[in-house]
Every structure is written in C-alpha cells, then in structure tokens.
Length: 237
Image (cartoon, rainbow, N blue to C red; front, side):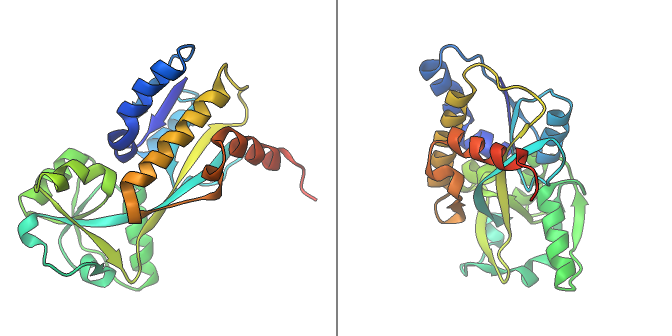
C-alpha cells in the first residue's frame, strides 16, 4: 500500500503512521510518499499512489473522495515581525510582501481566489516551490507567508517563526481521503483505512482550534469510505 500525504500531515502523523502500522498490521507493507496535494492527485491518477490524503480535491470521474477535516491556515512571519494582536485581518495580509509556492499549490490558489472575491490584489513577491526555502525567507524577515500549522509547528515551537490566525475571512481548506474507484480493494485495506482514521483524529487533536472533524471521522473510517463509495456508485435518480 502506497499512502500519499502532504508536508504538514507527514510532519504531524507520518512517523506514528509508519510505526503503528508496522506493529498493529504486520501483514501490511506500507510506503509513505510526501508531496503537494496536486502532485499526489496526479500520482493517484497514474496509479503510483493507492490512497492520498490531499487538500481541496476536486470531483472527477472514477475518483472517490471522502472529506475528513476542515483546517485553518496561518499567517506566518519572523518572530520580530509579529505584533501581539491576534488574529490578523486578511486585508492586512495581502498587501505585505509574500513568499508562496507556485500557481498549482492549494494555499496559493485559495489566497488568490479569496483576494479576487474581495477585489484585493495580493502582493506575492517571491514564487518559491520549496517549503524549506519559504521558511528560511520568512525567518530572515525577507517576506511573510501563509502556511498550514503542520508545516511550521517545529519552527513555531522553537521560536524561529510566529504564526497567527487569519480573520475576515478565515482561510480554510478541506483534507480529503482520495482513491481510485477503478482499482480493486487491496488486502487489509479496511484495517489500514481505520488506522488512517485514527491518525487523522490524532492530527485534529494536534491542530486544536484550527481543525474541525467532518462526519466520516465519527465512525471507523473504513465504514465512511464504504458509504461514500456506495453513494458514488449509485445511479442518479
């Protein structure tokens, strides 16, 4: 089983997923892949990944997508550039010098769509498709950025970066479990899905007020995936 995760989910639950799967499901050979959401979805389409945990997955033929959590994004700066007030208004962010990934990135697209809806032009000065490079630029106060908590948790805890919630509007994204409807279930898939559900609930606990669980996480995840697959396979009335 090849499981794809984004940087933030890998940072917060990747180790637990690998270790606990090895102990609890010895019959499962699990490989973890870390990529941007859009890259994970391309890999899923090419059958290089069996299951992807990706953000803001769009509906497409032959794809099963199950929403798991809704997650807030953070405004991230160097500690010295972060005033005491929290949260920060979206309109106050977009005029600042920003470093963000390329146009295909989920966070970049959400920023641009929100700014367009509010008739505000975002000031993206640095187009950098490397999380490490963006964090270095921000830490040196060369720019600010918008990132998920999972991508900056270690830096915030060590005082290298500062994160603030965003308001008016809040920037949110939805984490989906996605897999192809064209492939047959693999051995031990239900047990692995339930392990993923346990890990995502743990992920939510670490995000605290930044995350809201969605209904598929309220029961074993394998049941939620089966129900979603049944709805997807049902003919339209």
